Length: 423
Image (tube, rainbow, N blue to C red; front, side):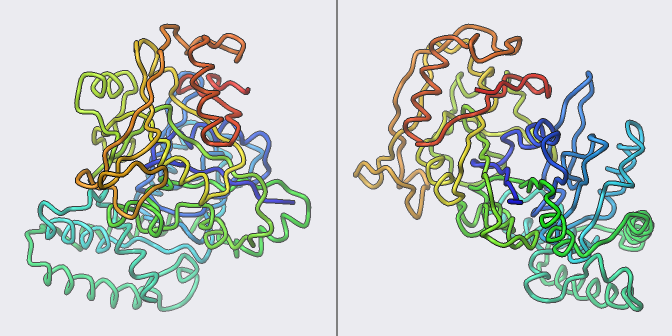
């Protein structure tokens, strides 16, 4: 059986958690393949809102296995809090939540290093979530990291001590004011480790290989977005993992020839959290309206998201590098009420009009070229079928499909799992 993928095509926050939750009924296994608690996947159903950071978004479905893959970095303290939040709603998760032994652990000193590094950059800061993600991936590639499987071996605390001591020396090197009480942080960390050890650790790549041979269906869940990919995103204002389709192969141990459908999620407009270039960003009343109506606040950081019109150049780029087979458009309901809606269909790059993503999209190099559309007034949030869509929305969707050469098979018209319409 092929492994399907579901990932974000913009700068994150596209609504992946909700769509994974909706899709879960079709799959036996939901497998998260990269990132860490810098993700905030929001699910809403039965009048309740749930925010997941590390745990896969299929966890509320009793008959589906949820796997945290080897490409994920896990903060035991945050993970413990996620489990405690689940305890209030479900009891079955301990039997269907599996952790890869090859997933790396975020230490308290990783978070401190993250803060010291960001503070040292001054105005050139990246906009880190300060969750220790970057330093943890640095230790992973530097072959210094501690993995979940190490917790089952003797002497792992000695390995921890050596790495934490190294981190403290690095913090001093940054020569910035980072106040902390490591003994207090470690007490919380080691208590969380004991909770983590109550879950089932597995050799996840072998588990998935066996599952595929048995004909089980697997959906690989991505975090962040393609434009934050460490290689193909707007570097250096990116995350530290491979957020694109290739990350599912390295983050789960799935071979490329076993990949099936690739579902790509995008908002009907564009948002971005943190620093970095954003060609279609709005600084006027339209941008404020999108932010207010769309409730554009980071689920993990609480920071307001920067808002702008849809950028088709960046979106085409993401579709191409991911091999997207189906598109899912979210938050079309947020655009209801705009007299005019704009879409970036080209860049003016150093005085020349181009239709591809160049190496650098900083504002001194790139100016967006917009195509305008007539907006719609209708409230989409109560609609149950695509036949109810206003003519202007259909025209908008059909234009995007033509430009992107990929079908938009699902449209989300609100945060609840029931506000999801198949086309």
